[in-house]
Length: 397
Ligand code: AMP
Image 1 (cartoon, protein in one colour):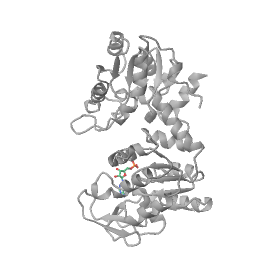
Image 2: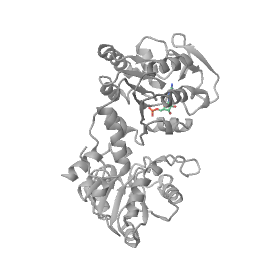
Image 3: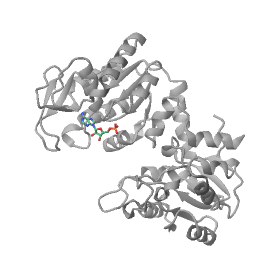
Image 4: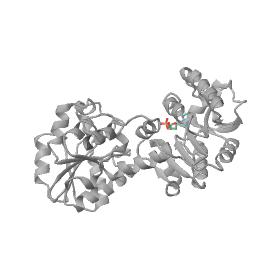
C-alpha cells in the first residue's frame, strides 16, 4: 500500500499536527470512559509526535449527536483519561473550530496535547463539508489520520481535510491496514471466518465477499437463527430476520457450490424471556419450543466449532456467538475466544462487540490482532475502498 506515513511529514519543534483519532469510546453510567482501548491504541502516534516537538491537536467524534451539541457526548472524559494515561497535562478545548480553538492552539507549546470537542456536534463534519474541513485545516500545519475506526466514512475530518494539508497515516492506521491486508490477500490455509452478532442483514456483503476466499465459515449468534430458519428449522420466538431468510438460503447455496462449509449451531441455549436472569435450557435446534428464543450456542455446537477450526491457520472473527453481555448466555462466545487463543494460527478479531467479548475473557494478548474498527474492518475485508485511506493515498501523489 502506497500510504504516506508520519515520519515523512515535515514535523519540527512547534509544528501544529492535526490528528484525527478514534476516541469513540464507550462511556460508563457516570460519564467516565468505560473502555479506553482506543485511546491507548493511539498512544504510539501521539508520543512519537510529541518526541518530535509537535503541538498535537487531537480531534474525534463520539457517538451520534446528529450535528447538535450534546453534553453527554462531550470528549472531555476522553481527554481526562488521556491525561491520566500520559501523566502530563492535556488541554480540552470545548470547541471544534473557530476563534476558541485557534487561540488554544496558539497558546500551546512544543509537545503539548490538545483535544477538540466532538466533531459531530457540527453537522458539517458528516457532510464532508469543504468549509468545515478548511476551518479544521486552519488549526494545523500537517494532518495525520490515525482513526481506523472512522476510515470507512468520508467525513470532513477523515476525507476533505486530507486534501488541504500535507497528510499521512498514523501508526495505528498503518498497523490495522497491514494486519487486515495480510488476511485479505495472503491468508495461510485453511482460512476460516467466524461470524456472529445480532443481524445477518448487516453482514451479507461480508459473507458474500469472503466466501470465495475462505475454506469454511462458522455462523453463530443471533444471525444463525435466520440461517437455521432458512434451513427449515422452527426457531420459536428467536430473533429471525424475515427479509434476510432468502439471502441466507442463497448464501448457503453459494457455499455448497464453492465447497465452503458453513458450520451452524446444532444446539442452542434457549429461554422464554429476553432477560439477564431468565431461566435457560440447552436444546437441539430441531426441538426449540414455541415461545423459546435462542440466546447462545450450546455445548455440542462449541465442540463442532472446535473440530472445524482445529487445523485453521488463519481466522477472522467478527460478532459474538450469543448475548455475551449476560453471564448465562456468554459461554459460546467465551469458548470461541478460548478455541481461537489455542490455535496455531493468525487470528484477527474485528468489530466493536467482538472486541469487548474478547477483552472480557482476558485472552486478547493471545490473538494476533484485535481491530479497533468494526465497520471499517468489515468494509476493508469486503474489498471496498476506505475513503479515509484513499484520501491519504491521493495526497501522496
Ligand atoms: P453485532 O453488533 O451485529 O456484532 O451484534 C452484537 C450483539 O448481538 C450483541 O449485543 C449481542 O448481545 C447480540 N446477540 C448475539 N447473539 C444474539 C442472539 N442469539 N439473540 C439476540 N441477540 C444476540
